[in-house]
Image 1 (tube, rainbow, N blue to C red):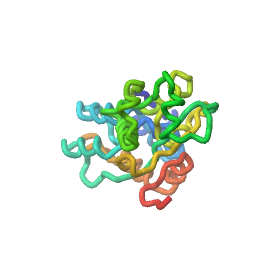
Image 2: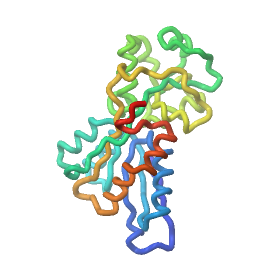
Image 3: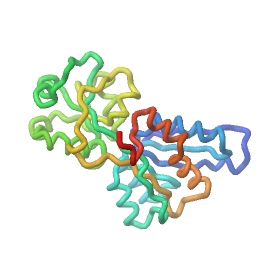
Amino acid sequence: MFSCAILFGGQSALAQQPVVVFAAASLKTALDEIALQYQEQSTHSIHISYAGSSALARQIQYGAPAELFISANSAWMDTLEQSGLIEERSRVDLLRNRLALVGSVTAPEPFDITTDLKTELGTERLALALVDAVPAGIYAKAALQSLGMWDSIKTQIAQTDNVRAALRLVAIGETALGIVYDTDHRADDQVKVLYLFTESSHPPILYPAASISDQATDAGRAFLQYLQGPDSTAVFQAHGFITVGDEQ
């Protein structure tokens, strides 16, 4: 897990108790910007811990002091809700995303995934987040299975703890290709999108957010509300996320 503590000095004692947010790693660039923006108009600081949604959900189950959880899929939020850990009526679907195959900026184009994937990989590896636990990996495996390609390349998969770690492997040349969210490639100028998977090839990529029942505070609820407002929406969209209900 990696975290971002966004704190300002010289504020009230109340502000020294930050709102603790657990968020999917793919949200980091946009959510860091939103948190800084929010703190310019609030006395409350925001502390965000990023990791794969599965790891964060398990930590919440074990009692980690998170006030808000933003997952990269519905299943892990469902798990917490079924365990009674989500504050009633706080859950909301914030965003949607797309799945992308990425490669080095020098990778050849145009790219036909059905014929070029094996050729471009050669004997190298394909970076994915954990395919049985992390949403990005689950979606990627499903997409490759829908194309009938999973069995032929599964021995070349390099699995990582979260989607940004998979992106990093491609960026530093440790793997030839990777499958990440469409929004992720914007965080690293060493990679480019070679192929966008059709949304019908995998389960819907949704980002639900909710307050944690025994940790929720008014400050945390206010930040959750802010995430649904126009200022946050503008930032999310600038980073390539699709607002739920948007017909793009």
